[in-house]
Image (cartoon, rainbow, N blue to C red; front, top):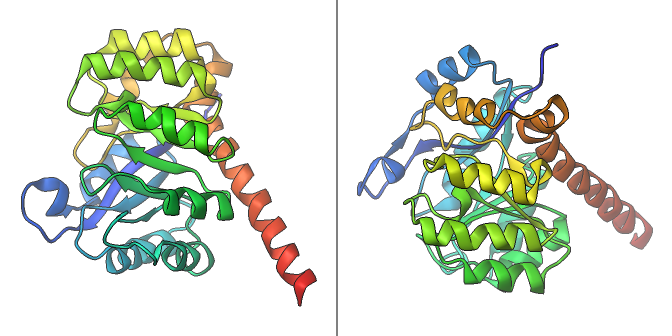
Length: 260
């Protein structure tokens, strides 16, 4: 039986800082060919690193809304540079662009209460790359138990195994903390996360367009999941987080109508 596969982590568009591929060019044309060949049906897109995330999000929205059956969108925000404007950016992303999540990165700045408050307001998941700063996970998960945080790469794209081991403890401990499989090179640590935290805490992701989706998908196959576990990792967990967003969006709209 064909199983729905959703890639929950892919950059798209041009960056403008030119320090590396991550802030120069995230063209997805070839990547999407590889994704289709790997059997991936849907992909979550967010911007490459950029000095103007409002402009970058708008360009990602063009892709998402041109192919709504293929793409989801997350709003990329900079905790410091966009301070005071996070609500407006996310409101536009949700209500004009049909985005369904927030992305922020420690490379830009540490996540802030403002970002978490806005995520709570819109019932959005937050994909936050902590860059091995695992202590932050304990703080945000405890302060915002009603916000779901996806910490990619088991907490470290740079293969900091100590940080990844420490993160698995947080993944087990906090109901609102998730991870994705993207860029995890130490398979033993991914297997440990799977066995200790469970399939319901892991989302499939690639960190495209620079990682090959077929290679990233092979890691999930190597976990030797049963069909229910595979379904959770490959699409079910992402869709479950989206259900909370959909319910929250409906409730927010209902409150707005009542207040009129």
